[in-house]
Image (cartoon, rainbow, N blue to C red):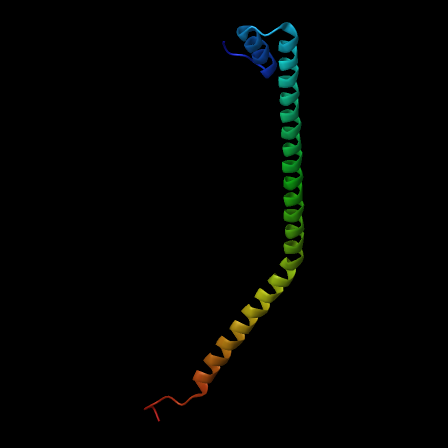
Length: 106
């Protein structure tokens, strides 16, 4: 029969090829058009659902970013305090070694 751009064109060509009456060909073409339109509507719905899901994910990521930015100063303070505590511990260990009598030096 050939290659057609739309389902309607294909339906009309098929109807002509099998020798259906013009009324039946129009009915077939209309049915094919309705089916194609229904598919287009479903595809549009799927696109809307996908876009809504992307928007929801984007909003979640923005919220996570906001929370992380709020936590950043707290984490920096924790790191600062840990570094100070490490320095204090190293200083005390060094001081303790200096206070201990050296073995064999008597």
